[in-house]
Image 1 (tube, rainbow, N blue to C red):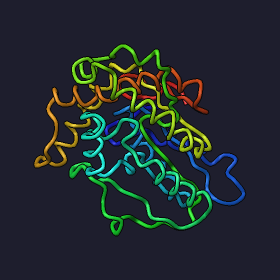
Image 2 (cartoon, helix red, strand yellow; image 1 turned 120 degrees about the vertical axis):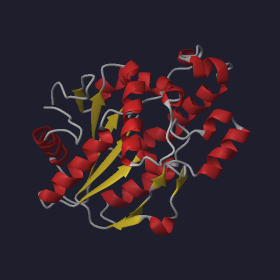
Image 3 (tube, one colour; image 1 turned 90 degrees about the horizontal axis):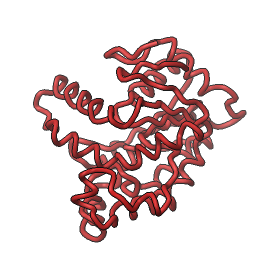
Length: 270
């Protein structure tokens, strides 16, 4: 099994789809969660699962937690009213969790709904008129970088985990606010997941490198794209380090399936 440039091999994808479809409900759609830190290949795997499902005649919908980021204006308000670091999308508290729950509930119940989408280059949610509508799906794939991750204890928040927290959140206000949001808002969303897969990297230290590889790949596809340089990628990933380390500690015991990856994102087992 491997993950070449164009994705995971067919045997691995087929095995994961079989797991997603196993014990599907008699009516409605099953929600299969794919959790994995930045750069782990979860979006690639999700797209491959959608394609394989279509090949089998299975109608599949895909939602990413990235699609329910708060609109830019809302995050800027949080940055002004709570903490400047909340302008950056991604950490807990920067998603419209109620929207994700509404969409997943509609899909599970067999009701047609529109799938929200987020434009990362514009750093804003697309207008509702641009959301694709789906009806009567058999399977829902829900992917995101910290799906299923529980909040940390207050004691764990005391010391900064990196330079970003040390310099820009010295009193811990940002990380405490994010952790409170994680404890308050996200468990109801995690409960919508019927079965959870965790793509487990060797450790957090590989994440900045994986994220940099993504940035380079995007630049090759679109040379006009305004991307991040290496220093910007390093700073960006520090926004996610705390929760990522919590995911690494907790998800192997929470996820229904854990697939360990090597440094080249190749599954070590399925």
